[in-house]
Image 1 (cartoon, one colour):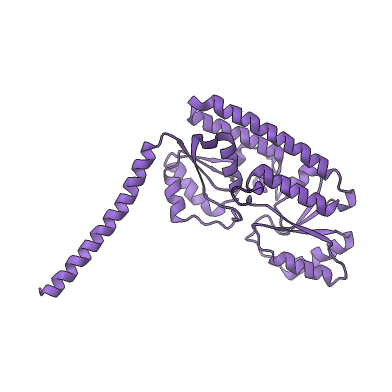
Image 2 (tube, rainbow, N blue to C red):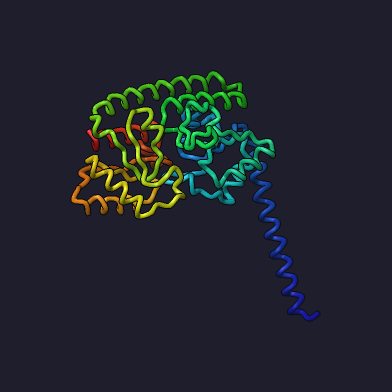
Length: 316
């Protein structure tokens, strides 16, 4: 073997050893840091759940949210980084009801590993849910738009956390009590604003059908251009049908959503305009994700209040 081939072989082996060593170090260091931390490690999927756990726990847990502002959970795919975070979690909270469909297999594997993997929809009974096909097996996953549901979920999540961290039980119960009071105040605000909307205008037109629980709770008819899942496609016939409805009912507003493309809503506006009717009001609603961290809309209560204010101003 000549000197050039020996040198090449040596460099190849050396690089391979370095790569293996770097990967091993990455997991060894992460494993060491995980073991050294005494805080409960909680992973959440949606921004609503991340905010909920923070409201209930503050900085007393190590909280990791997988999804950020404007992220559509229907379409979200897990990354290598997600798997890494989930692998070391003590508790995983996810919405359930197939909202995070592309994460279902991963969560099933985590359950087999013994990680406490919780669908918060389990806090609710069938009577609390909106059935999509009257079979009691397929439900609308947008459960956070019912404040009553959210109160039940807050209590449920708090109990799961307390079971894993009993020494801080009093602290968690105090935060739960405070949060439930804030939700009561939000409920009062919503009731005052939405009661001002005349019966003939109590129709909410949105990009996709995410506001069913909102409509049920506040007696507002809700029509989404897309279905429950943003993966579903719409056709020209759907746009024409809804445009005819808007003109017939003289609906004054159409709403876009922060986590859904406005392409279909723009097509709907054009279809309405072509029928010699002009929508005089509009607005942007938060549906499947909260606003940017640090903003008012970056919390569940701020998001809900923004939506109610926007709807009230457009339809009153």
